[in-house]
Image (cartoon, rainbow over all chains, first blue to last red; front, side, top):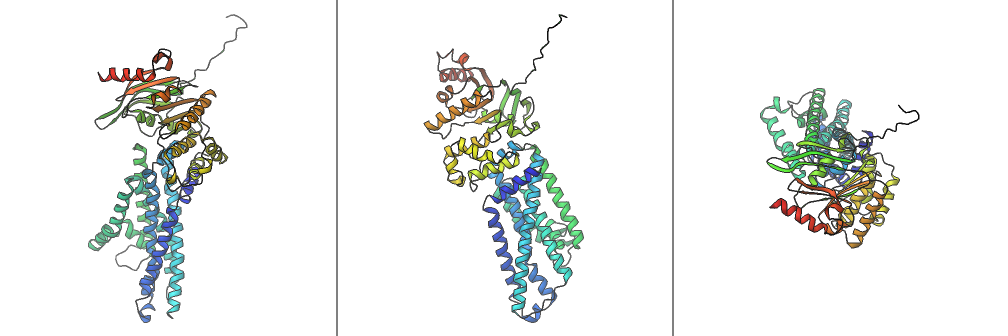
Length: 243
Length: 250
């Protein structure tokens, strides 16, 4: 298992895709900080609520982490490298587990980097505009730890979805369609149900200032449950499928 | 019992490769139908058949990449997935293109060596052996088909295996490359190791193999020493092959 995880980490380090995903995530985080932090007047920006919106720019990180996990998994099928992988390690559940662990590690790194960028840019922006920082320690802690946790779990879910769907473009479309349509629409229409979806459970864990979201601990529990469900499905599919 | 007569127990070595009543269906399509054969150590066996005969499917079944509908595919007496450190027993190259185009040849092999707990020194060794040393640090996207074949072969040799399973290894190789492959396989089998290679380059394969398995439309037509099939060289392999597949068509 350790050897397979090391191999999977080496896979991530030896193509440009991972670095490109990380740069994309950082750029979008930076953009979101300025989009939330520039338009409001200084009085409004002085409120805790407005500042929570500025720093919640890091919520782009989990989506990128999910896509990074998904792309790493689907590349194996797109380029056929799953075959040499399984010739060296034919125990498929070990390969699946190693991919999930590796994706979670990579996802937490992407999320942590985005957190750093969001806080440095956010604090710089507020200071430049002469606004005192009103964000409480609990919120900061929730945002930092929550984002890293959602990045890790999101990337593992992305990896599992990639192993389930296998077709790269199909899987990316499925995840984006879910993230921008199903997740938002269901939450608007039936909040009591929509908040149980992985996207909204993640938002709860990060502590986003939205109505109807679960408490952070409940969000974590729901997101872990989703991750386990996707992981089990990925193992079952991988054990049965021909490659 | 006569005193002083030592009973020597000859261990019963399982065949290196054993297909027993192997069948694979894809929906209604019967890709492989009741195929049985055995390979012994130290032999080079050509696995021949027209396009779509089921050669690649049989190789995938032997390597545990696909599950048989019926029958058993065994290597060293076990299912592939049950082998401990399989890369050190079986080296396989199924498709030359099974490499990420954005990864260098060297990194492709490092990834596999890492997963198989194979010493990293082996990567440079096999790159030299397949004559890919100078291109090793270029991304695979820029490799020719022949270079990809060599990289796939390097991956197969990485664990210093006892058995090589190669699917169409001659594709994309120039005449010099063919001679190099032939010498490599002869040297490999000369050490008592075993090779199973599929091909439809019959004239080329005749110079490499000592045993032949012929399949067509998923069914086994022949499994015999090359000499037997070509009547000790009086017939060309191509004629014997066409006669077998022609009879099957009739």
